[in-house]
Length: 295
Image (cartoon, rainbow, N blue to C red):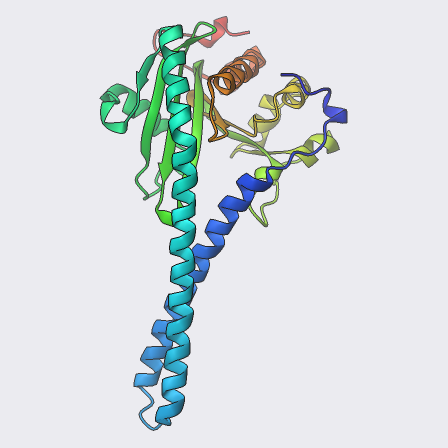
């Protein structure tokens, strides 16, 4: 799984994954803008009764064509995204079900089969703001233990059609609760996103972005040894989050049992690298557990 030292690691790229996401965002913006402009044009024409009827017809037809074409492109893209997801889903489900049986983990193929307590855990792991209005969907959930800690994984979807957000989440329980933190591969950043926290390593700043409300906590968590560790992880590890007492990794949607083990191992190594003084200064104990035993 090791990819070499940080100093020799190339910046990573996800051309297909980023292209799919950004194309969906672009089409969504085009459809929304064309619909807004078309409605504005039609409303404006209604308020100009003296305008030549032929000019009115041309403008009206042009606005309608733009809206219809953009909507059709959006529908085609939505169908392509759906077909791609279905093509990836069935092999993934079969492999994960077999792996769960081998490890003695619990397996829940659909959202309706996930028990309420696990639903609550997954709801807390969802990416983005906690108050996101789009209702998430969970499926293909796994629950068990790894390296002596509780672990879960699930397939996550939020949004609709060409704006569909899809993630494969893998999470490992921490011995205590820490403030929210995000470490993300810069190649996964959306257009125009910049880092508001810089570290001593220019190479690290080039490869990774750290996001947290408290920069002192961000610097403490992302110490030099962790920077080196991040540089040695498998290239599929592109986004690490701390949310409460969970450490979360965003895995590729072409998920496999091998990738599950890779991401769980990465999470266990990162959790073990949290210094004791970070727990003392920023952590909160979870009932029945304590960060004092965490090294």
